[in-house]
Image (cartoon, rainbow, N blue to C red; front, side):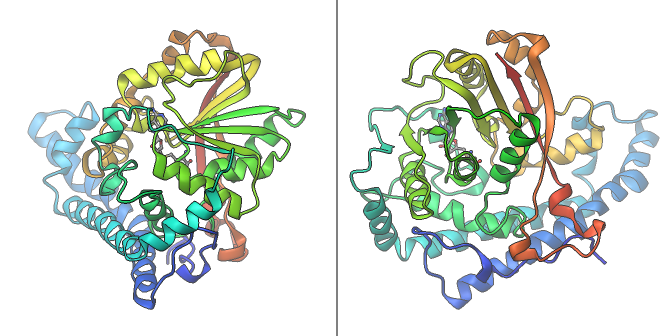
Length: 394
Ligand SMILES: C[S@@+](CC[C@H](N)C(=O)[O-])C[C@H]1O[C@@H](n2cnc3c(N)ncnc32)[C@H](O)[C@@H]1O
């Protein structure tokens, strides 16, 4: 029996002002994908480790007279294994199916969705779009996680399609693990900030890489007295994120089109500068510029942190190999390099002091409104899932 909670039905996904309508069949496809992804993660993934330990590694050792020395050797050996091939193909297919269903839902009602967003965005001073912002090639040219057109493609005036598609698929790919509003990372970050810094009430917070606004909106709800600026290069994401936040009654975020490598705001403007699930989608050069901007924009005494998957250094080789799957098969070209980086050196190069750096975990939160209360500790997968953070005090 799986220790993971069965995914809740798609009918429990939270509705907001830019939610599309679903037909029965569209919802059924996402239900199928949520079940498939949960089944793959809970029941099928562990078989890869068994295949490695019982078959692949012994065969490698017999051939080479030694164990694999890095994850590349693990990968080359695993690629020939039929169990890994089957799991990997299923996972890739589930990503492609998720995009097909998401795109179908959004594109058949695109005009309606764009109009809903436009009405919520109309003349808002908290949505600052700037068509002169150049989209970096590492964003413009990549269909991240098999998402056709990436984050920036615009199919019509006031387009929000990329973000609407991103938004509706998260529930299926995570089996509901991020909660009914896909904001589990934001809730985890807010809880982490409150527990680590109970007396800290930041006046101004900068979030870089808004996406659909899931995380920053939850942070804004947790810190209602903070003034938050959230920047993204992609206009469709910003239009959607702003409209979604407004419709959820969140009014303390200004969404701004800007490149995080060069944010048009004054030095020492923020008490907190943060990114979530973002840096791995930039580039080797961009991440250095973003760190330099973080240092420039942060007030002395301010806090900066970045939520990502853990760095590879120190992880077992097999885990490194499994974590690298997204780079190789899920259109995440900077993923490998990002997770190989010496992040302390990266922050030091940006001007931060080593003795003020930290790495930490933020505990995940299971949305009991859709999962119900866990019956036992082993069922508590959502809460136990930890988010990794690295950061620094200036
Ligand atoms: C994975 S999404 C971010 C997810 C979001 N932070 C969350 O927690 O839900 C990555 C976003 O970063 C944006 N992005 C990528 N490079 C950027 C850059 N240099 N400056 C600003 N935004 C960027 C993309 O357009 C995309 O919307």
